[in-house]
Length: 119
Image (cartoon, rainbow, N blue to C red):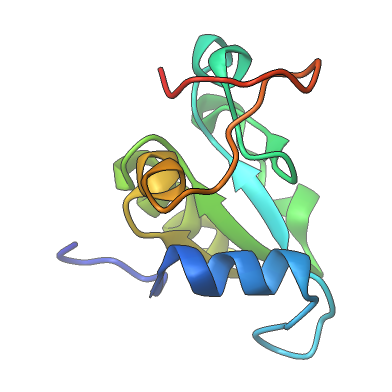
C-alpha cells in the first residue's frame, strides 16, 4: 500500500512469529491482533488471535509487544499496523488477512472452539 509505515508479512511468517515465539526485535512471542468488527470476530477468527476492533485501537495498550495485525483482507489491518508503528510499537500487517489465513489451511474458529467462517 502506498504510504504504509508497517511492513507486510505472509501467513507462514505470521504463524511462526505467533506460534514459535520468533520475534522481530527480540521481544519474545508476537501477539496476533484481529482488528475486524465484532460480528466478523464472532463468525470466526484465528485460534491464537486477540480481538480489538479498529475503531477501538489504542496503541499504548500494545507497547512493548511485537504485533501481527490482521483483518479480513489486509486494508484495515494495514491502517492499524501503521498506527502502531507510528506510535513506536513493532507491528506488521498480515498480507491478505484472515482470508489468506484460511486459504492456506489455517484454522478459523468461533469462541466455543467450533469451526468458524470468514465474514
